[in-house]
Length: 554
Image (cartoon, rainbow, N blue to C red; front, side, top):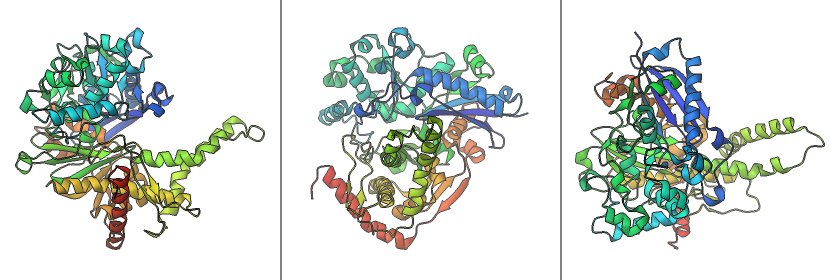
């Protein structure tokens, strides 16, 4: 008898479904579906830092990815699925009405970006985030002490307040707000109504200022003091939260039919993608899991005795059970990693789409040629950059092209490049960008160590870690530590599957499920001590440039 579980991973651009055999840990089948409206660029405006996703993108893509999965999986495998779990990007909240319906699913809000999910990378709410940080510093109790001490425009309350200030129609119709990861579990279990809705520990603890010590969320007076528009919202949020290995409910008849699954199977509570990815990477104290994609999320865990009453400064929160039950989950990350490389690729390839070639090429041929050039740009840049001696370009760059997530969140800061000369060429600049992303990650590692959190080893997951030896070796040299790259192509979905197997009772704990289901290591990198010494000097230049740009002039 087969025993399967499903992990569903909602990324920035697509949803991935992974079918896992719980007896062997083998990944039986996987599928990917892209969000159609997002792919078309709808409801977004990068010039205003606005990035919104329609709930129908999530719903339709889920149905599509599951239909395709069953075409790839063994015959009748759906009958042997015991549980399903989700992970998503975050913080990605949406306004819901008094019945728990996402506003964008209602006709009058169907094309209103403010009624849609506010994606993690939406930085519209910098002003609101600063107001929340200031209020917390002035309050009798520091309600941000478990979230790094600085509230981010990427997070729940800042985004909610920004939308409420911008859109009176949404304000008048929004009964509450729900994180994407929680919405998925509620949708499939029929618990979206506020009377039934329950929230995950992961999202609430890291982004929504939940903590057990103050009975859920900061008091209503704290939020009213920031803006009366927030009056009463904290009381409409569930005070209790649940870890991702716990049961949210059972799959409804409606969704069982849509997804081709048995009615009544277990649906666990959800988590953010990076936290689930860390579970697949067998995260433990002293090991940092780095999810390397468009941005990065850095996850480690610590034992209660090690943390005690310490509040780690400048990170994205410390939450009991947000990653592994029985351990404190610690989150950090960079707002841009792969996005920095993509920015440079788009910058230097900009003329390709602007040149009129109609007199020599038809549109289909031109599109194919442009695509081929764009697909090979970063590969060629990496090959040439890897041959350049370390420290010879004279170029230093920051990785803050999308602001700074950690350490010390500040989404208002900008990227900078210094040292450019007439002789500077594209591979030299690309080399500086690769070094910048590695240096930004080192700053996070050093902050953890300064705060007493041991980081002895790094495990990476995500596309970049599998695609570029040059980038990964640079990281090993800059970080002064070994790096393991996981074999699984869908590590976040695999982590969700581990949660699902535990929630279904197929394993007594996440730890026991990990022993069978976690991903093996595909490749390892060791630091080159000679290169590491050179990068130590360049890191000082990175820090000096960062201090200057951040306003602390030398």
